[in-house]
Image (cartoon, rainbow, N blue to C red):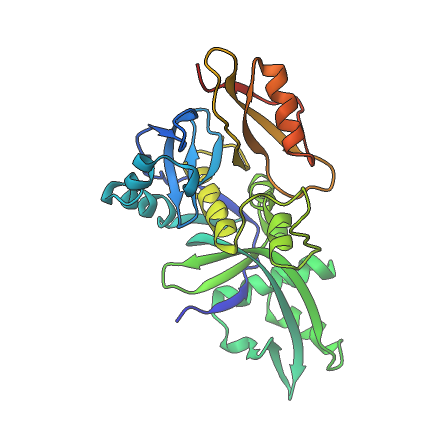
Length: 322
């Protein structure tokens, strides 16, 4: 049984271990109008994550894919690619050289309480001495981070806890869950990641909070994407971490695909893919909005009208039909 032992308490740097790449293929929407050349990263029952040659990542609802692509996702080849990418263990290294092997699986909020009870030091409901040695060492880093004094060993921690005079000390930590090789799960607070890794992993956290009702969530808000579920946040995070593990130049967000294609009048209009970015107060990632227009300017205006909480910065505009 998997256990969430608490929040890993280390600053971490990614050590590259190649992810097995899939061959790029042509993906189509149900109309056959929109096409994208991309590699498969991962998928679940609702969404597929694809990566362009330029390292851009996109999330497309499976219901919007062509019948051929939906059938492909049932194939052994697609499942093997998914498992190789998202199931591969990643090696993370602490600033003091400690290696942690695991894979990032979800976001998390955790509360850690430290208290001296009946003459013994407790972390949440477990005695400090009964915690895994690696977790004991890592706990020192969290206390040092919040209390701004040097905590290098248990003796330092004991002296500080004695000063609490039996009162509990609580820390509310935000971060990601890492599944280790033995199946145990640890939470890693964002503030302990290296700068690049932190910005990568925090990108979808605000949207995760809203979807879980931790922050204000209004399903009718124009900020809300047309498809969301807790599993989709997990898939985006896992795919982002896997792609970044392969190549640290990968785009640090996964754009959500918004396909709004109507019948094309022969020779009068074309389909365009317009990249829009979240406006102020919008916690969601960028969008690839596919819409119709006689030229890129008209298509961009149409895309903005369809996504009132998004802006064009400018972003890429691609013609995706004849």
